Amino acid sequence: MATSPDRNSLELIVTPGCEGYELLDSGGGRKLERFGSVIVDRPERQALWKPALGADRWGRAHAVFSASDEDEEKGRWRIDKAVPDGWPVDVLQARMICRLQGLWHIGLFPEQLPHWQWMGERIARVTARGKERPRVLNLFGYTGAASLIAAAQGAEVTHVDASKKAIGWAKENQSASKLENAPIRWMLDDAVKFVAREVRRGNTYHVILIDPPKFGRGPKNETWDLFQSLPGFLEDCSRLLALENSAFILTVYAIRASALAFGQLAEQVVEGSEGRFSIGELAISPVHGGNAVPTSLFVRWWRDD
Image (tube, rainbow, N blue to C red; front, side, top):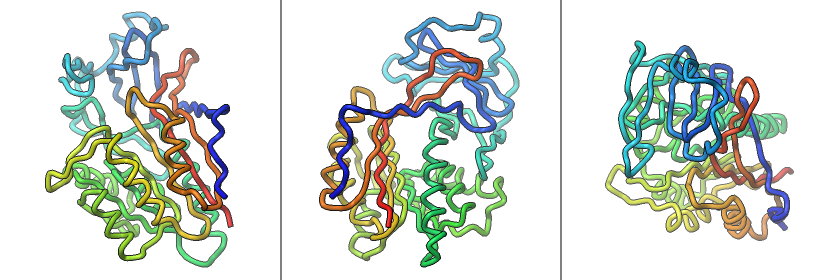
């Protein structure tokens, strides 16, 4: 039987992020970050404390994002210093091209580094058995950091995203990472429909990454609502897990949510399967000490054979 999530021991994973990233400071509802050669100042509602650095340090930002009144992720960038149209940030085996977009996301979520490292351990475990090549499914894959890292570590990767723009950006990152010949299938598709088809086909994967938005639309205007859509979707995902050495990672950036709630949902969908759980939060730590910024909830499940 699957080991239940420990309701009395939620895990906090704090990381300084990847090689090309630094959290310089946070506070007052903002965070100051360095992505490669560019410093950005972005909203962060959970940074309730006072900033540690002074206005002169915050004033070194190349760009400042001003959120709209309705949604902190929508708004506009104010460019104070010259910023390239795209610039590289290295993370593990991938080179990601970052950009200032209409949204405040710039193409990379460095707090997920511990997930990518853990994914690598799972891939290595399958490889060591020598029975088959590891298969990775990256759902809501965005600009492809996890897909590129998995492929560089020897996995066959299926990357699914409903955004044509995101798929194009991911392919650009593939070229920048010199992984043009890596075995990656780029699927412009609705994740829910794709997973349902994979279940009917009887396909399986050793590692499944699930990083859903709170709300979204597919390429044919399919609707996604995290709290309504996730339970049935996660159940279908569980049917795609390989019988040996399989694992999944669920990352949730929703507000007004609990790691415990998602852990208990995951426990239900893999009921009867051998395996173990880890549930908790991801956070980014500042490079020179100070308060860590919580970023997302996570659930990990894995089975060793």
